[in-house]
Image (cartoon, rainbow, N blue to C red; front, top):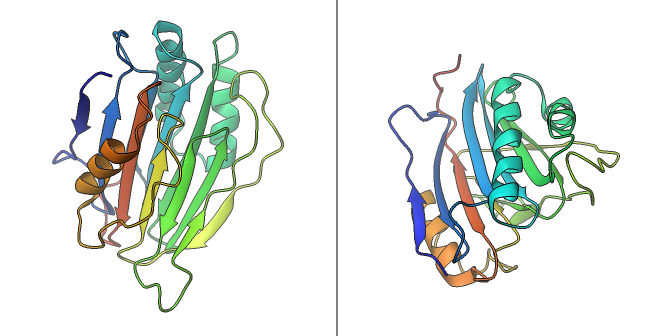
Length: 216
């Protein structure tokens, strides 16, 4: 199993969320098929995790194509954005992926997923709401078998935390997480404790702050 790699939030990252990413490339492979994109868009922030089918160079190529399509069309809402990715990935191995958009104007998060990139939203104030919500993903492959899809919208408040994890991470991965840990600390913790070691793995943790971002 290759050493874990941190992806730290840089100075240009959107202020609407704080986030951290931890990745692991399968031993013997030169590149990972698990990638992510975080991008400020207008009044919000797009967050996505992509898992190219299998592992190795072909999986990585499909994942890069998906991230490129996400980046090009990031101003679109999550459902048409997934459809854009589906068309862009025709002829590739395909990917599974989950997408979320934090909207500062509405105080809401819209999320949608195809395949087994798991998603969980942990609520900072569990006294007012259930402790968490889980993303309901649809079976399929972006690039070859896109199912009927419907995005879900959830109200968010500062302190709510989104976690996306690829299938190289064992589920459940949300138990006994420290409420005081930073997003990067949480991503590192989940990867170190729950990585299967038999596939590429990626964990992205994004905490909603409610602060204005530097949109484009």
